[in-house]
Length: 174
Picture 1 (cartoon, rainbow, N blue to C red):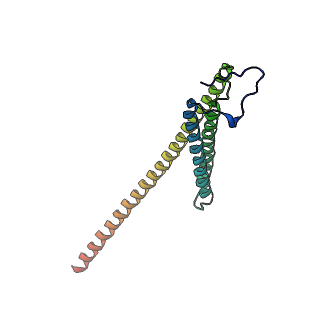
Picture 2 (picture 1 turned 30 degrees about the vertical axis):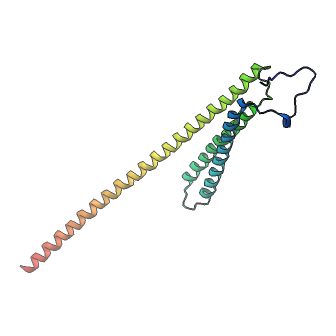
Picture 3 (picture 1 turned 90 degrees about the vertical axis):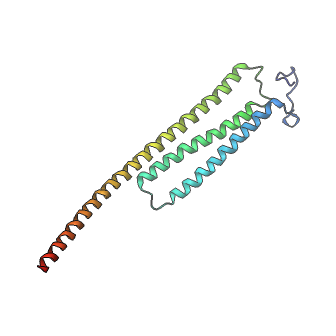
């Protein structure tokens, strides 16, 4: 069992001589997966934003929405990557958690606060996307109602013209 307390007068061992403690393996795995996931999301957001910037059909409202969405998602993905790094660092056998329990509480409390902020950012992004999609669906329904009204008027006009044509043709036969 590796302890975190160093004997007085002896420097800590170098990183190359570090013994991997089996307790640190889950933290390394989770942290690494978070870093990779966050980095993948960052690349995905950058690619998506690049394509949206070069979309000629995008209006000003759409561009503003996608710009804000890009910033929100980049912040969330970057924070996920930072959390991954912090988990790997915090689970390191060289961290003096036993000697400084207050530092331990502050460190992991900070990570929890960042995680909470990521959750709030994700909820905010979902809400903004939902509000926008509801607005767009409402606009489509309004256009649909308008088109249905115009179609009904065209059918009425067509029926009138057909009735008038049949009436005039019956009058010509008599």
